[in-house]
Image (cartoon, rainbow, N blue to C red; front, side, top):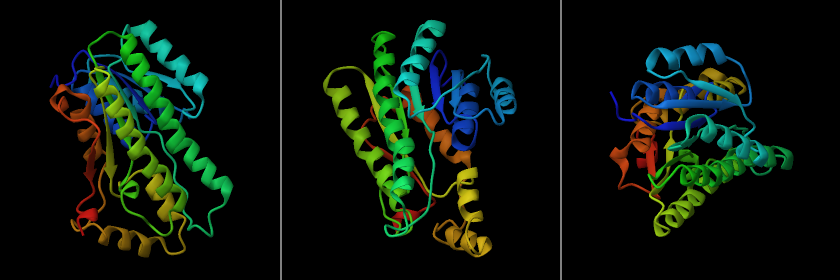
Length: 259
């Protein structure tokens, strides 16, 4: 308990999957959690879970992470309400399958606008808001994927977006470190995690059971991960325990990329 006490943390994509897990686990460690999402589905259920886990009342705001104006508005609101921002967890994301021939330009632009542009804006305005809070520093946690490190022939747009997040984050980390901001920027690279996005992707295939078994077999541990497997890593990166870690990746993939 208390690993994130006193910290105000903004989590995008907070009403499902990894975002929700991160919010609950950070609240349990004493953080003041602000979750945003483009939908209000599960809002009350998620907020109740966060409130039950922590000591502070969680707050929700609707946010389109691809809108620069909304990023300016949400960070201004947080600073006015809480007086500080200590960390941003850019967890919002989408996924559409398709190889380079099948993928349409419209799908490519959609995936990259959310997964890459949204993280660019979250990193840019997260750094600005943390700096406006004082000189205490902070942490930016950007959700990439194993698909940002290795390629999948059927995930052309997704591979591109997550690879971009990886190097964008390294650039931002170096800038902050060399500027003396005390703001760390790191990425997390999950394997296949049991989120709605993964379930929907598998469910859209011609033979979901065969695809499920195949994907599980790609992980040497023999199964897919759970959102909490990633949420615990988020807690570490938000906490001061990771104060010597910036510009790098945490790969949490059941051994997928070790092969």
